[in-house]
Length: 307
Image (tube, rainbow, N blue to C red; front, side, top):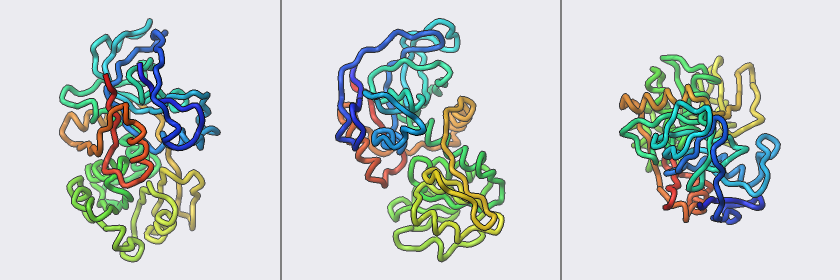
């Protein structure tokens, strides 16, 4: 089978498509024919070696965490799935393995896919939707009627966060580029600000929660718009701290089957739109990494496993 692997840390040019072998599933595992995987910013950090203190890996390493596919074989002790089942899940970053044609996966990392969901849609969900949920309702404790500012609202996390916040009854303010303002409103934003033409910190005040997926100057200016009891949740700044009595917290989503099952149910009930950008074949997976590294992806970038 083919796998996208690295033998040294660096940029996408360090990733090589190689022929690898697949072990048989052990206790509690299944072997999976991978149909699609999605690219997350975490994949680029793993590629660069920036996560070694948090998620140490041994080289060579197969990239990718979010995947969807078909169960081919089940190991001892697995009764939740059978061969032929369509499933979606998230691999531990220390294991990786989603950018490949097949993988051996812990059964507990997987959830059944809705019948009308494509593999590309499914692969887009685990990390992005899980992070959005955790940031808004775990760390952010968002309540109905509150004002929430969501940066990069057309991105992977942002596109899910806008929908989830709106469904929770919040007043949603989104920042996006001019070409994505319409998408932000379509997803549920009550207000949409073109961050390239308008300084959000000059026009907003009394925001209860900011979801920051950008960092840097955007994060710094976000403090100016907070209400006295407001908070910022960042998905990019490990070192964020409270300021002036207002909480600042970093979130990182680890796989939680309950959260994934919840967002899958939202999709099943036609309450969740999954925004897909480019779908790259596995043979061109480097281009998928480069696209995400360049920023400005609209929704999720997908790698489709080649046969």
